Image (cartoon, rainbow, N blue to C red):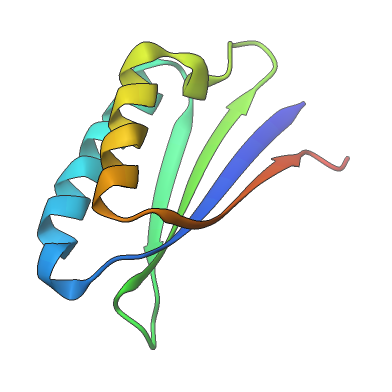
Length: 91
């Protein structure tokens, strides 16, 4: 089974570059933990972002790894999550 966490954020435009650098650290940590990560930016609102972290049952949840948790905490310091949802594969 695959699992997914989605996080929506509003990131003020004056700190977007710092946020994107932090996202790169999070993605690298997730990939090192065996997961996958994607980031999308709002087409109409460039200060809106949605992050995805995905993994399968054959690895431990990447979000429980210390490096991932530390990178996620840094992103939260830049821009608190507007919403966070956890998803399980439906089929």
